[in-house]
Image (cartoon, rainbow, N blue to C red; front, side, top):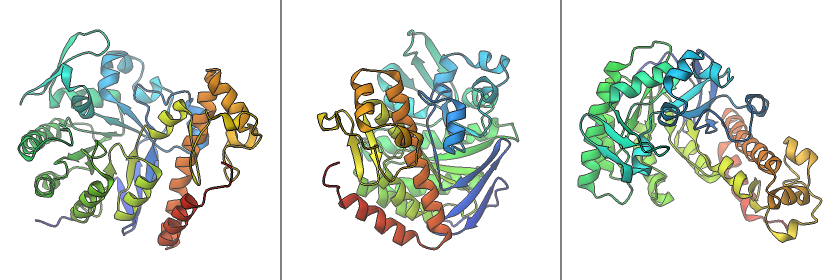
Length: 377
C-alpha cells in the first residue's frame, strides 16, 4: 500500500514516535496531544459546568450532532450564536456525526446509498439525513473538528457485510469532503473495516489521498477482544500521515489509552469516566473502587490518597458512599470531578513521559501499581 506524508496546518508534530507529542491548533484554542476529550453528547458533560471543565484542564470536548439535531434543533443553536456560545464553552469542540447511532440504534434506522432514514428515539418522528446534510448541520453548529457520516457495523459482521459498509462509508466520505465549506473547521476522515486488515488497508488507500485534516479510527471498542483491537491499530497507524492527528473513537479504559498512545494515537473520547461516576465506580492508581460497597460506610479516607482533585481533598469515602446510596445529585457530581481528573492527569503524565523519553518506564510503573493492591481498598 501507498505511504503518505501530508502537511496539515492545524497540527504540529512536536515529537515523532510512537508514542507521539503534538499540538492541534483551532480557532478556539490549542489541544496538546495525546489528549482525552470528555463526552458532552447533548452539549453538556453530565453534572459539570464549563467552569468545572476549565478548572480540570479539559482542552476539548465531544458533542454529538445527531442528538443536537433532534434536541434542541440546529436552528435553535444557530439563532443563539452557535454551539460554543449556546453552552458557554470557549475552548475547542469536536462533533461526531451520528455514525455510531446507526450502529447502536439499528432497529429504528434504514441505510441506503443516499443516506440514513431513522425514527427519533425521542418522539418517533421520521428523519432523513444525507452525508451533505450532516456536514451542513456540523457547520451550523460551529464545532472546530467535525466528522463525516459513516457506517459502523457490529464486530460480529462477516467480511462481506463489513466490505459493503466500508465501501458506502468511503463514498459518503468523498461526498462529505466535497460538501465541506468552512475553512475554520477541520474535517477528519473515518477509517472503518472492523478487524479485517485488508479492509482497513483499503480504507487507508482511499481516504488518505482525499486530503482530510485528520484521521479517525472507527469501528473499534464495539465488542472485539482488546488484543485484536491493538493488533488492528498496530497494523494501521504506521500507514497514516505523520503530520495529521490520529483519533481513536470511543476508547476507552486507562489501559486502552496507555497502549494506544504507545502505538501512536493522539486523540481519544469515551463516556467511561463519566458513566462510571454515575454507577459508583471510582478510578484510582491501583484500579477501580466501587463506592457502593458497605466496607466504605465509615471509611474516612479519600478515594485515592495520591489524588489531588477537589473531591479527594475535601470528602471521605464514607460521605461519598452516603451521597450515592441516598441518590443525592452531589454524589454524582463529586464522582465525575474525580474520574475526569484521573483521566486528564493520566494524559498529562503520558505527555510528560514522552517529552522526557521515559514512556516505557511510566507504562511499566502504571502496571506495577495496578498489580499492587492496598491491604484494604
